[in-house]
Amino acid sequence: MTTLAQALRQWAGAEVVKDARMRVALWMAAFVLATALGAQVAVKLPWTPVPMTLQPLFVLLAGAYLGPRAGAGAMAAYVTLGAAGAPVFANGGFGVGWLLGPTGGYLLAAPAAAYVAGFARRATAGWLRAFALFCASVAVLYVGGVGHLILLSGVSPAQVWTMGVVPFLLGDLTKILVALVLVRGVRIRGLGT
Image (tube, rainbow, N blue to C red):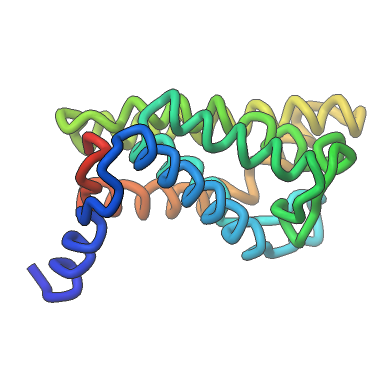
């Protein structure tokens, strides 16, 4: 094990806050912040109104580290924060109007996706099970996003599939693999992982 990995494990395992509920609340806030920062890493693609961001990675990690309920709660807090006016969505977007736009379906599906990813939290969840759960979690994001895009655009599901899923498949597979490595490699003491 490298010195950096040992330092990260020690840092992540430090119990500064003794109360378990407070510790979970702080980690939820940390994942809200990480998701907001990940949203700012946005790459616009010319053929779709949906930018490529790091948000799905943090949705997966929130669920996997916090568990289904707290992970979903963190993502619900993120969406609520953005809807209330904090510029936490892609490219500094905010407000209820943003949720009614082309990326709204993905954002609204984030709590459910984190819930699904949360079942990878158990220490007994092996690589294959965690991979399947992360894929299912991203599929939840796609269902929300594509469904919303179909309602907004009025174009065929096949066209929406090419706009709202195909451009993101390789990037999201990469995010799934990164999440797997992080979840299996860095344990956070006090969160049960």
